[in-house]
Image (cartoon, rainbow over all chains, first blue to last red; front, side):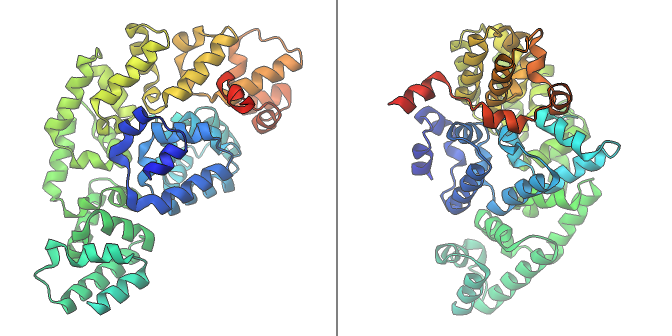
Length: 127
Length: 299
């Protein structure tokens, strides 16, 4: 996993800051997550930002991240890459948390909810 | 051991992981047949309550004694957490990242929540924080207090630390030197300590962006003469530089005067209504590259 992080262009100082999150056992999942992020048009710089800003991604299950992204796309999100780059911690969400947010905002239509999240992804975590 | 290996291989574990399971101290006292029964019954129970095979594998790799906890105890823990106000999905999320939670005593879980409340958080806030960072349950209260004190020593008030940690509980999992490093990096970009403090209080998620990302934004805002946005309307730093650039180029190319910088930060709906273009169209038409990236491409 360390090799992969270096290959992605993450600086030594940043690797040092996130080293406690490196989970060699999770390498296969991590590689699949990277492919997924590339498929939704995350640039290399976005991917670096996501990893440095949210090192928990190194330990996430591919299946859970894939479920989250597929669900967001199925709802009509078109710029997931922009959301994750703006707020890397968004990638720690599970599908059910998006569902809960939508339920909470039931008086709004889904397009408005998507627009709000795309404009200000932190909204999903605000009290 | 053959049957155990066969079952776990079929389940999806790798041989190396199985070696770790069968050699774990928790299972030394068991006969092979008893261990196999425990593994099968716990796996089946976890599948039944909604975990997938890959989630169970991850949980067991993180906490091998999960196979040593009785189904009754797992079930009781789930019910206790539901009684405390967590939903089944939230419990699943927390236990995938912290399977040790199944091994914690419910009294100590409740105590941890009460300790956090005594530090000034509401029960609702603690709940949200633990869903986002289940590892909070594994931190000692002294460790949490120390992290708060460390943040105070960096110049934040207790209330400000509370605001920051509610917004990004993951900061409790970060080394204080990393936090200090982020502040220093921001200061190296030309901001005073006071300005950095103000910016991170307004937008705590600055702590969850790489300095490369922040620098790209700051460089671009400076280039177009909007550097005041960074200190005066820090929340806009949330928006990806790719989108701000694409909108800026669109306005420039279409001779649309940027009378207020806010036009660059419209919601997509408002932008569509006013200018008839979507973010996706703009992003495709005006891809952003920083000066460094352009130089790199030329090389």
